[in-house]
Image (tube, rainbow, N blue to C red):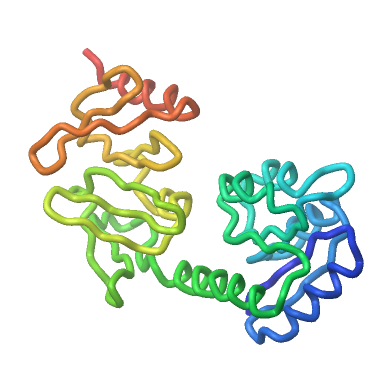
Length: 241
């Protein structure tokens, strides 16, 4: 079962969502919350996989509330105002439902959530190795593909997918960057940007705010995010003569 919560200050909107949720067997409604504080308690006290989050709420908007969460569940925004769509997707929201929410549109959004949660749970077979393993498996193209750590040049995040780029091949898998980052040996890989993880041994140079690597025999430059620059430079300085 996929545990969900509703966060909306309008009782009628809560009732509509609850009715829709009851029509989807995979969904289990854990709690209806009228504001961000109630939602925060629900997230702290329960394992929540999916949150239907209204944007316009008193005290703290849904967008501002989502920004406070360090490890949020999947989020589907619900609102009567289409002008918030771009900002919602910038926060990696799974979907954006405009009120009044039809059952057809609701099911389309929840199917995306169900698919992502189910695939995410089975994508990475090997956790961070505790036995000295130098590889892991990911699910891609309807099969499990072996990936050697030493072969990885960098990993690129594209919305709900990551691309593991190697010298002569690549693997595309449904996975979040945060989830995959937690399964990589921290000494071998470094997050340098919200969209990039690089193999430390594959770094050729730091050029301004860019990391230079070699891909397919050619130099390639990846951006360094301002929130990741200090940690990256600390690693570089430890190995500087």
